Image (cartoon, rainbow, N blue to C red; front, side, top):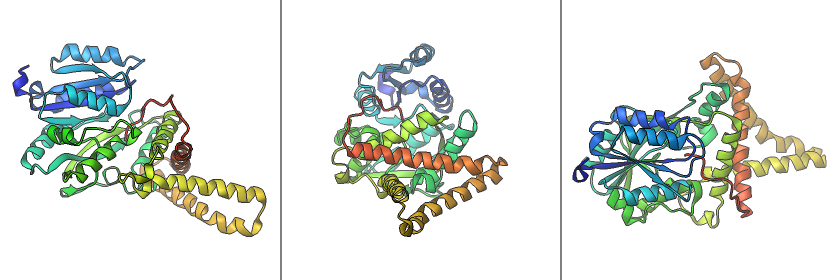
Length: 345
């Protein structure tokens, strides 16, 4: 591989991804033209499953793959390590829980090269899917693509027909010099490193572009435990020290905590047997359940499976309460050392 010919560095942070990583890397290799003139940096955060073995196999089969070892484990340090080690003009940030379409990398790089220098990052929307296809995984995919589930997250809930300038994109392709100019990823914001970075870029006068007619598949969690841990940690990180002063957080990031506090208050009202308040106080929750059931019914009809009528409300409530209790936990500033950035956006 001629170092002088490297145009782009593709970066994938990894931690215990034996189920997904080979599929992800295969989609990148098979779908990228001239990948031999790029480099693919696989950054392992100390995996304890079969991931290291799989990475070694991939590196032995492809001389453009390099394995880096991230001693800090978390995503932001992995990305910063890879950027430091990278030799490309452009940085393509990817995720191990994904499948990328043909020409995904080439399209993003070609578009970024054609755009003004003020555009520092380009990306697209994503489609959430379950790799296993089981009921829990399918329901998590539905909820994660719903505005009622994740709020007005454009790249998760919509498809666009024309280029838009936006606050953030999932993962993204960057001009390396723009990344370096803002200090790369902040390693102190937990799972919000993408939001924080794009906020810094915009504050420095750069633009973030979302491309139309391009999307990749993101594979969601497949069972309750990792799903709960993922969103608990997301909520916890939102309420890190000085979170309210961080402009990259939106109202949707705090809504689950407000909802959770409301349910705690509702439980107190019921236990106190304040009958004159019970009916009024219960109305918002009744509306929540009604909307959740309608969403479940719609998907039950669409997918011809009546189980979604119940599974969708259950997963919705699990998502919002996990995130909400995580935010409350973070607000109390309790250390939480055993969560090692296992989640993705």
